[in-house]
Amino acid sequence: MAENAIEVAGTVKRYGDKTVVTDINLTVHNGERMVLIGHNGAGKTTLMKLMLGLTHPNAGTVRVLGANPATAAAALRRAIGYLPESVAFHSAMKGREVLAFYARLKGVAAAECQSILERVGLARAADRRVSTYSKGMRQRLGLAQAMLGKPRLLFLDEPTSGLDPSLRRQFYDLIDTLSLSGTTSLTSSHSLNEVEARADRIAIMKNGAIVACGTLSELSQQASLPLVVRLRVTVGHTADVAERLAPMGEIQRVNDHGIDLSCPGTAKMVLFRHIAGFGEVIEDMDVAPPRLDDIYNHYMQQVQLQ
Amino acid sequence: MRATGILAVNEFLDGLRNRWVAAAIILLGTTALALLLVGSAPAGTIRAGALDVSVVSLTSLSVYLLPLIALLLSFDALVGEFERGTMLLLLTYPVARWQVVMGKFFGHMMILLAAVVVGYGGAALLTVLFTDNGITGWQAYVTMMGSSLLLGAVFIALGYLVSVLVRERSTAAGAAIVLWLVFVVLYDLALLGLLLADHEQKIGQGLFSTLMLVSPSDTYRILNLTAFDSVGQAAGIAGVAARSGFGMSLLLGLLASWVILPLTATMAVFHRREL
Image (cartoon, rainbow over all chains, first blue to last red; front, side, top):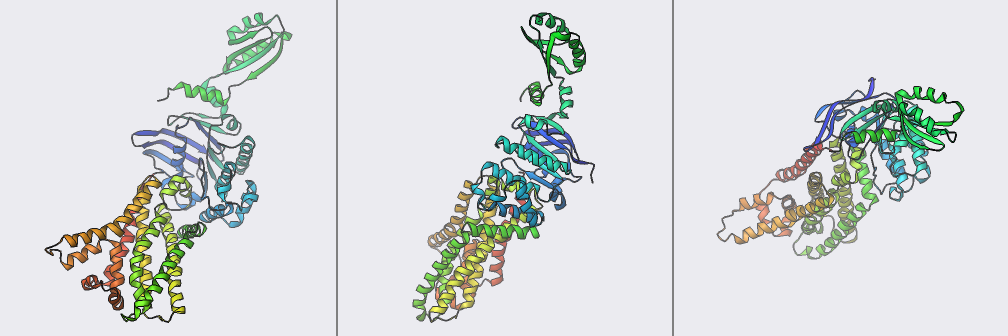
């Protein structure tokens, strides 16, 4: 078995004279949950298509499960699952028929279909035509076909867009269960606060390039975004406390019973010790580390949109 | 090979589900039955069995209907799946692109086969059972059925080529209509006009016959009208083609290449296509 599930090196993809993917290097380890985030048109879908062998790179190499997906044998295709953005099916077919068709193509036993339909919660609707399905049901059917044959690698292109909150949660729970059994996944998403807790690593794409990649804490260190400390101070002492804390961070807001200040992540321990030194004057304290939202915005602002 | 079979069966089942098979059977069956019954009337006078007499009229009908049915089945086959987004998913499965094309081709051919066998065959069976015309001339009739399938295959292949070359379904539909008009109507009209304008009779028999072979629908006509003497006599007009002396294998070979070349081109274009 190859060391890494996905290895993309120096990959460039142009459509006409428009460069959609610019010199991308990305490695996804076995069993990892990698999440791709980025603005519309950042190249996330194209990158996935390159990994699926649906389109060929103009330069660089793409290796998936140790093979070149563009020339890959059937064995590789049986080991991957793909849920495309806004998945579509033959609407005249019943849900069960759709899944059985894909199962036959993948060489998966028909018996597996029923248990997958139950897992995605479509068992009762399986004998209805796909044309009567809601968006959420189509998406479940999409995930069901991606799960056929217990793939080692899952590609999910915005799997939860257009789903209601409880469905989204179910969806991610399912993906988490799969990942516990060792399935590697590459998910693209716009719902930053959803993926934040469910990604092992996050890659941020912008204008066809990956501008940052790492775990959430690595990303926030790289971005060197400040964390925000919110203090509740005994009335009458705020001005004094604010003045003494000013060298340690940036005071954002002061009123008669509270202070908000931001400080770089590297300086936080110094700040905390200082705060402890005030004794009972500080009644309460909240620390808000930078969230994926903040990190994302930081990288999006850093480079001008072309 | 397995994938091709799965795709073919799926395509045929799709044809059953959306009533394509039923519609094609009814269309071919009723028109064949009507022609067989009407065609029985003059049979006595020209000493030909009802089945081979009807081959003349059925040939003229099939030359319009089968290309139409075939193009309606095929124009959407690839561009429709690109547009709906189902092709994207399909190609991530263990399926080669040529298998997608061949699977669809076999599936659509099964639909045509059902239509021709049940429609034309059923109509002939009913005529044989319920009239006293007998089964004389069944060979010509079966040849007509087989060559109709081949004609259908030609236009299915041409439809795929259109389907893989254009970017939108509506363009494919328009192109399919143009294809049908050109090969089924306009080319013959142009040949006829050429003959009429040719006062000095510069166009010889040989050149004219060769020009007819350019169009697959005319090749189909010649094949059916010359394969059996009885049909040629009943047709009366068959003289032109009959004297041309084209062998059966040449005519079949021409039709077969009209299937193979567009199919190969479709697979080549599809293979290079980026999704």
